[in-house]
Length: 89
Image (tube, rainbow, N blue to C red; front, side, top):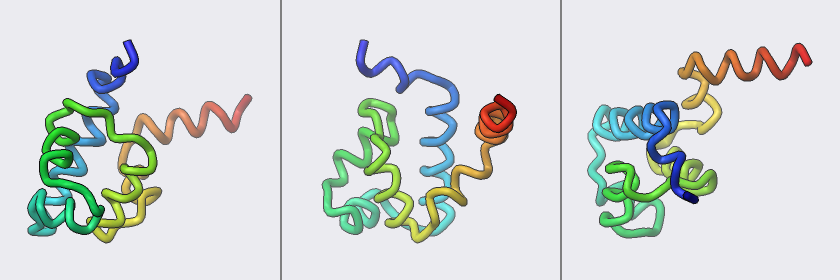
């Protein structure tokens, strides 16, 4: 199943954090869609986990929020442990 990752708890946590950040910044789905050059419907589908947010659209979403993608991801502890493990191999 190509879309199995949409149910992964770590993926869902990233999307949930994106939505929280969008709301914290007072932006609507329409605002993000306009900044990304897409539709509100697609943003809604990303946020509901109906469609996988690929890496390029993740970057575009972060840019639409005016946040740096790497800095955004640095908040996730599981990502830090993966990085630490890869450095010790």
